[in-house]
Length: 482
Ligand SMILES: *Cc1c(COP(=O)(O)O)cnc(C)c1O
Image 1 (cartoon, protein in one colour):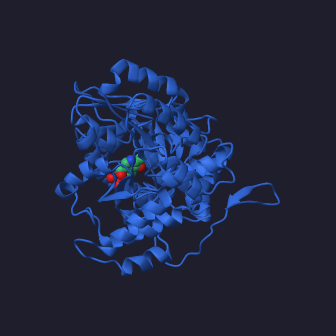
Image 2 (cartoon, protein in one colour):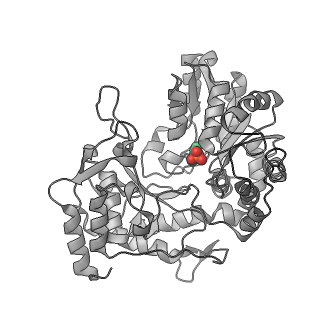
Image 3 (cartoon, protein in one colour):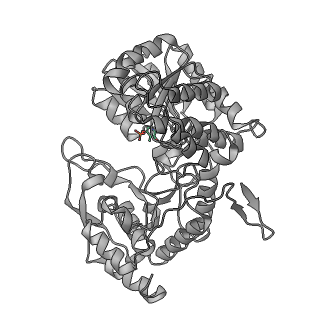
């Protein structure tokens, strides 16, 4: 809950107490430098034990509640007809209003089935913004996914509260250009993961629904971060302040044909699902479920995770749970801005995003400024985020680099996992880094895998070992033991 202090500041106060903890290590800076060198400056390859605050992702890393853990103990492991699945299906019906639920092992498995059933290549998929796994599923069958957010959604700093909206003019134009018969479906992502966890508004969803109906098109909602999108509608859209998250969810779902989600984010467990009220769609999908996922009452998930997801989804309808990550992100982004650090605004769900292009104007995109900044952040704090920029793109068919439109360091805030003290610590360290940004240099690949190179690639610092210079300056200010 956001609380106003007498000095005018607003801070997020945690509406939960810590019951189980995990010990974490803070290595001294010179050891962090050794770790970073050992992984070729690719923070993805760091071992968890060498990371102090792991802010790589919010996927499957959220804190679980006592009620979720308790539910896992009573999971029914029946292969067919599991009582755990009945609980999940009942929760989906109650909070989202869908009659039919198909369990899948994670979000991308839902995408696999949806593309298999509803896309006849080479149709296009129209959406607000793609998620990497969605794009790959569409492209491997020889189709394309078109991003139709407004132009301002790709500029880091901004004031549009709903940067995740589909631009309706662009949507109409795309349908006209390709012809409705060549559009597989319209996909709305809540919240748009790759461009800063940005939400869409209820009004926009309504308009997209109208366009879909007029053209006889299917509207599919990817609700992996649905709790956060509903929270932002409540906080930012006129007319929704007094509506509950539950009411907002039902209103959203009333407008879509098919809903799917990764349960690893808003769901607070590890799994996924597809839900619909259309019996025919359900049947088509169900035909393939046992082939790729498993029987209709587990879908590749552990029944323990099914239990945890059922409880997690219901908890998500509490404003304090849906807002737990956005409130921390808002605080984090505001603290960084106070120190002059350029961040994506308005703050969204999932993570605080630092604009590496503005932070490091002296590093060109092909020297991967976002990974350089992420590596430098690890050196001065032990925290790691993830690169979302040119390094996350792969080369095109001709072997040329694709320059990303934004160079971001995503510093994820998993739900209810970190404390305000830890956020404050990272904000302070990043601000120190901002004062010393001239020390940070570029990177170059020494080992570059052809696909998803950001996972396993290795790099080296350009223009001398700038990591050492940063650690020397850091130790001069803070001493050897930090
Ligand atoms: C995470 C995510 C997915 C994929 O889900 P997985 O569970 O990681 O397979 C799809 N869409 C969005 C918006 C996501 O955030």
